[in-house]
Amino acid sequence: MALEGLFDIANAATDAVDHLCGLATSQTLLASIDPETFFDFTQERPRVSLGPDGARTLDWPQNDAVELRLDGPVPEIIAISGIEPHLRWRTFSESIGEIAQQSGARLVVTLGAMAGLAPHTRPLGVVGSASDTALAAKLGLSKPSYQGPTGLAGALHVHLHEAGLAVISMRVSVPHYVTQSPNPEATRSLLARLELVTGIETRHRELDADALAWRRRVDEAVASDPDMQRYVGQLEDQIDATDDLLPSGDAIAAELQAWLRDRS
Image (tube, rainbow, N blue to C red; front, top):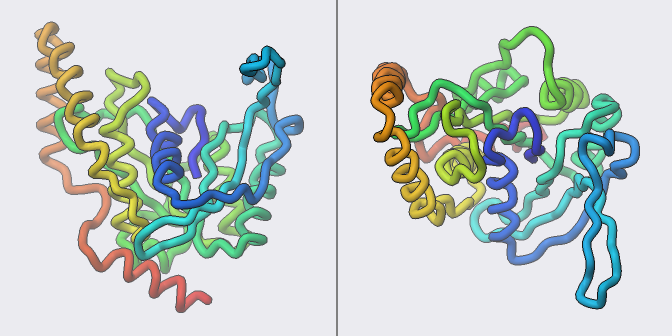
Protein backbone atom coordinates (compact mmCIF):
# COMPACT_ATOMS: atom_id res chain seq x y z
CA MET A 1 0.00 0.00 0.00
CA ALA A 2 1.17 3.51 -0.86
CA LEU A 3 -0.68 6.82 -0.80
CA GLU A 4 0.15 10.04 -2.61
CA GLY A 5 0.80 12.89 -0.22
CA LEU A 6 3.29 14.02 2.40
CA PHE A 7 4.95 10.59 2.71
CA ASP A 8 5.30 9.93 -1.02
CA ILE A 9 8.04 12.32 -2.14
CA ALA A 10 8.59 12.14 -5.92
CA ASN A 11 5.73 9.61 -6.05
CA ALA A 12 8.37 6.93 -5.44
CA ALA A 13 6.11 4.74 -3.27
CA THR A 14 2.96 4.87 -5.42
CA ASP A 15 5.14 4.27 -8.48
CA ALA A 16 6.45 1.12 -6.78
CA VAL A 17 2.93 -0.23 -6.23
CA ASP A 18 1.95 0.75 -9.77
CA HIS A 19 5.00 -1.18 -11.02
CA LEU A 20 3.73 -4.29 -9.24
CA CYS A 21 0.30 -3.79 -10.79
CA GLY A 22 1.98 -3.72 -14.20
CA LEU A 23 3.57 -7.13 -13.51
CA ALA A 24 0.29 -8.85 -12.66
CA THR A 25 -0.97 -11.65 -14.87
CA SER A 26 -4.49 -10.73 -13.73
CA GLN A 27 -6.17 -8.08 -11.59
CA THR A 28 -9.45 -8.20 -9.69
CA LEU A 29 -11.03 -5.17 -8.02
CA LEU A 30 -11.85 -6.13 -4.43
CA ALA A 31 -13.00 -2.87 -2.88
CA SER A 32 -13.34 0.87 -3.48
CA ILE A 33 -13.38 3.37 -0.62
CA ASP A 34 -15.99 6.08 -1.22
CA PRO A 35 -14.05 9.39 -1.47
CA GLU A 36 -17.00 11.55 -0.36
CA THR A 37 -16.28 10.99 3.34
CA PHE A 38 -12.53 11.53 3.27
CA PHE A 39 -11.58 14.35 0.90
CA ASP A 40 -11.76 18.10 0.77
CA PHE A 41 -12.46 18.46 -2.93
CA THR A 42 -11.11 22.01 -2.98
CA GLN A 43 -7.69 20.42 -2.32
CA GLU A 44 -8.02 17.16 -4.30
CA ARG A 45 -10.36 18.07 -7.10
CA PRO A 46 -12.18 15.55 -9.29
CA ARG A 47 -11.23 15.66 -12.96
CA VAL A 48 -13.51 16.02 -15.98
CA SER A 49 -12.50 14.29 -19.19
CA LEU A 50 -14.00 13.74 -22.63
CA GLY A 51 -14.34 10.32 -24.21
CA PRO A 52 -13.85 9.49 -27.92
CA ASP A 53 -17.54 10.21 -28.50
CA GLY A 54 -17.32 13.58 -26.74
CA ALA A 55 -19.16 12.38 -23.62
CA ARG A 56 -17.99 13.96 -20.37
CA THR A 57 -16.97 11.77 -17.44
CA LEU A 58 -16.03 12.75 -13.88
CA ASP A 59 -13.19 10.94 -12.10
CA TRP A 60 -13.08 11.21 -8.30
CA PRO A 61 -10.01 10.56 -6.11
CA GLN A 62 -9.67 6.80 -5.82
CA ASN A 63 -8.48 4.39 -3.16
CA ASP A 64 -9.08 0.96 -4.66
CA ALA A 65 -7.92 -2.42 -3.40
CA VAL A 66 -6.93 -4.70 -6.27
CA GLU A 67 -6.00 -8.37 -6.04
CA LEU A 68 -2.94 -9.15 -8.17
CA ARG A 69 -1.81 -12.51 -9.46
CA LEU A 70 1.99 -12.54 -9.76
CA ASP A 71 4.72 -14.92 -10.82
CA GLY A 72 7.13 -16.07 -8.13
CA PRO A 73 6.98 -17.45 -4.58
CA VAL A 74 4.26 -15.00 -3.45
CA PRO A 75 1.58 -15.46 -6.12
CA GLU A 76 -1.19 -13.30 -4.69
CA ILE A 77 -1.15 -9.83 -3.15
CA ILE A 78 -3.60 -6.97 -2.66
CA ALA A 79 -2.39 -3.59 -3.89
CA ILE A 80 -3.64 -0.12 -2.92
CA SER A 81 -2.04 2.77 -4.80
CA GLY A 82 -4.14 5.72 -3.77
CA ILE A 83 -4.29 9.21 -2.29
CA GLU A 84 -3.88 10.19 1.36
CA PRO A 85 -7.26 11.43 2.63
CA HIS A 86 -7.69 14.83 4.23
CA LEU A 87 -10.41 13.91 6.71
CA ARG A 88 -11.51 11.16 9.12
CA TRP A 89 -8.25 9.26 9.30
CA ARG A 90 -9.57 6.92 11.98
CA THR A 91 -12.51 5.87 9.82
CA PHE A 92 -10.24 5.50 6.80
CA SER A 93 -7.86 3.30 8.82
CA GLU A 94 -10.81 1.16 9.87
CA SER A 95 -11.75 0.76 6.21
CA ILE A 96 -8.25 -0.43 5.32
CA GLY A 97 -8.32 -2.84 8.26
CA GLU A 98 -11.68 -4.20 7.12
CA ILE A 99 -10.32 -4.79 3.61
CA ALA A 100 -7.27 -6.60 5.03
CA GLN A 101 -9.30 -8.78 7.39
CA GLN A 102 -12.10 -9.69 5.00
CA SER A 103 -9.64 -10.57 2.23
CA GLY A 104 -7.63 -12.80 4.55
CA ALA A 105 -4.42 -10.76 4.22
CA ARG A 106 -1.69 -12.04 6.54
CA LEU A 107 0.60 -9.02 6.35
CA VAL A 108 0.20 -5.32 5.53
CA VAL A 109 3.20 -3.47 4.07
CA THR A 110 3.08 0.30 3.69
CA LEU A 111 5.57 1.96 1.37
CA GLY A 112 6.63 5.59 1.70
CA ALA A 113 9.21 8.10 0.54
CA MET A 114 10.57 11.03 2.55
CA ALA A 115 13.07 13.79 1.79
CA GLY A 116 16.32 13.15 3.61
CA LEU A 117 20.08 13.67 3.70
CA ALA A 118 20.73 11.10 0.99
CA PRO A 119 23.21 11.74 -1.84
CA HIS A 120 21.95 10.82 -5.29
CA THR A 121 25.28 9.13 -6.02
CA ARG A 122 24.66 6.25 -3.61
CA PRO A 123 21.94 3.58 -3.42
CA LEU A 124 19.06 5.19 -1.56
CA GLY A 125 18.57 3.76 1.93
CA VAL A 126 15.30 2.21 3.05
CA VAL A 127 14.23 2.27 6.70
CA GLY A 128 12.09 -0.65 7.79
CA SER A 129 10.07 -0.97 10.98
CA ALA A 130 7.43 -3.23 12.50
CA SER A 131 5.20 -2.57 15.52
CA ASP A 132 5.26 -6.23 16.55
CA THR A 133 8.34 -6.83 18.68
CA ALA A 134 8.78 -10.47 17.62
CA LEU A 135 8.43 -9.65 13.92
CA ALA A 136 10.85 -6.73 14.16
CA ALA A 137 13.43 -8.92 15.90
CA LYS A 138 13.05 -11.80 13.43
CA LEU A 139 13.54 -9.59 10.39
CA GLY A 140 16.14 -7.25 11.88
CA LEU A 141 13.79 -4.28 11.62
CA SER A 142 13.47 -1.41 14.05
CA LYS A 143 10.44 -0.64 16.19
CA PRO A 144 8.77 2.73 15.59
CA SER A 145 10.37 5.28 17.91
CA TYR A 146 8.96 8.58 16.66
CA GLN A 147 6.86 10.64 19.08
CA GLY A 148 4.92 13.75 18.07
CA PRO A 149 2.43 14.88 15.44
CA THR A 150 1.81 12.18 12.85
CA GLY A 151 0.12 11.63 9.53
CA LEU A 152 -2.24 9.06 8.12
CA ALA A 153 0.51 6.44 8.07
CA GLY A 154 0.99 6.70 11.84
CA ALA A 155 -2.73 6.45 12.55
CA LEU A 156 -3.08 3.53 10.14
CA HIS A 157 -0.22 1.54 11.66
CA VAL A 158 -1.52 1.94 15.20
CA HIS A 159 -5.02 0.83 14.18
CA LEU A 160 -3.84 -2.21 12.20
CA HIS A 161 -1.51 -3.30 15.01
CA GLU A 162 -4.29 -2.96 17.60
CA ALA A 163 -6.57 -4.97 15.29
CA GLY A 164 -4.07 -7.84 15.40
CA LEU A 165 -2.72 -7.46 11.86
CA ALA A 166 0.99 -7.82 11.11
CA VAL A 167 2.29 -4.51 9.74
CA ILE A 168 5.62 -3.49 8.22
CA SER A 169 6.61 0.02 7.13
CA MET A 170 9.28 0.70 4.50
CA ARG A 171 10.38 4.25 3.71
CA VAL A 172 13.02 5.28 1.19
CA SER A 173 15.12 8.39 1.75
CA VAL A 174 14.93 10.69 -1.30
CA PRO A 175 17.64 13.37 -1.80
CA HIS A 176 16.07 16.55 -0.48
CA TYR A 177 17.66 18.60 -3.25
CA VAL A 178 15.96 16.64 -6.04
CA THR A 179 12.38 15.74 -5.09
CA GLN A 180 10.76 15.94 -8.50
CA SER A 181 8.80 13.01 -9.87
CA PRO A 182 9.58 10.45 -11.12
CA ASN A 183 12.51 9.07 -9.17
CA PRO A 184 13.19 5.56 -10.53
CA GLU A 185 16.19 5.16 -8.21
CA ALA A 186 13.99 5.55 -5.12
CA THR A 187 11.27 3.33 -6.57
CA ARG A 188 13.82 0.63 -7.38
CA SER A 189 15.22 0.77 -3.84
CA LEU A 190 11.76 0.27 -2.34
CA LEU A 191 10.98 -2.64 -4.65
CA ALA A 192 14.33 -4.32 -3.95
CA ARG A 193 13.75 -4.14 -0.18
CA LEU A 194 10.16 -5.30 -0.53
CA GLU A 195 11.38 -8.36 -2.44
CA LEU A 196 14.14 -9.03 0.07
CA VAL A 197 11.86 -8.95 3.10
CA THR A 198 8.64 -10.50 1.75
CA GLY A 199 9.78 -12.69 -1.13
CA ILE A 200 7.46 -10.91 -3.58
CA GLU A 201 9.07 -11.03 -7.04
CA THR A 202 9.22 -7.33 -7.96
CA ARG A 203 11.52 -7.43 -11.03
CA HIS A 204 13.13 -4.24 -9.78
CA ARG A 205 16.05 -4.72 -12.16
CA GLU A 206 13.75 -3.56 -14.94
CA LEU A 207 14.24 -0.05 -13.53
CA ASP A 208 18.05 -0.15 -13.72
CA ALA A 209 18.31 1.77 -17.00
CA ASP A 210 15.85 4.46 -15.88
CA ALA A 211 17.64 4.80 -12.52
CA LEU A 212 21.02 5.20 -14.25
CA ALA A 213 19.61 7.85 -16.60
CA TRP A 214 18.10 9.70 -13.62
CA ARG A 215 21.43 9.70 -11.79
CA ARG A 216 23.27 11.01 -14.85
CA ARG A 217 20.80 13.89 -15.23
CA VAL A 218 21.28 14.87 -11.59
CA ASP A 219 25.07 14.53 -11.99
CA GLU A 220 24.95 17.05 -14.83
CA ALA A 221 22.90 19.51 -12.78
CA VAL A 222 25.17 19.21 -9.73
CA ALA A 223 28.32 19.59 -11.85
CA SER A 224 27.25 23.10 -12.83
CA ASP A 225 27.24 24.28 -9.18
CA PRO A 226 30.52 24.04 -7.19
CA ASP A 227 28.74 24.66 -3.86
CA MET A 228 26.33 21.82 -4.55
CA GLN A 229 29.25 19.58 -5.53
CA ARG A 230 30.88 20.16 -2.16
CA TYR A 231 27.60 19.58 -0.34
CA VAL A 232 26.97 16.27 -2.14
CA GLY A 233 30.53 15.24 -1.22
CA GLN A 234 29.74 15.86 2.44
CA LEU A 235 26.59 13.74 2.18
CA GLU A 236 28.62 10.96 0.55
CA ASP A 237 31.08 10.96 3.45
CA GLN A 238 28.21 10.72 5.96
CA ILE A 239 26.41 7.88 4.19
CA ASP A 240 29.63 5.92 3.57
CA ALA A 241 30.31 5.97 7.31
CA THR A 242 26.95 4.42 8.23
CA ASP A 243 25.71 0.85 8.09
CA ASP A 244 22.96 -0.34 5.79
CA LEU A 245 19.50 0.54 7.11
CA LEU A 246 17.98 -2.90 6.51
CA PRO A 247 19.56 -6.34 6.77
CA SER A 248 20.46 -8.33 3.69
CA GLY A 249 20.46 -12.04 3.00
CA ASP A 250 18.37 -14.61 1.18
CA ALA A 251 16.94 -16.01 4.43
CA ILE A 252 14.92 -12.92 5.41
CA ALA A 253 11.83 -13.75 3.33
CA ALA A 254 11.90 -17.31 4.68
CA GLU A 255 12.04 -15.92 8.22
CA LEU A 256 8.95 -13.80 7.51
CA GLN A 257 7.02 -16.74 6.08
CA ALA A 258 7.97 -18.88 9.10
CA TRP A 259 6.80 -16.12 11.46
CA LEU A 260 3.47 -15.86 9.65
CA ARG A 261 3.00 -19.65 9.81
CA ASP A 262 3.78 -19.70 13.53
CA ARG A 263 1.41 -16.79 14.13
CA SER A 264 -1.41 -18.60 12.31
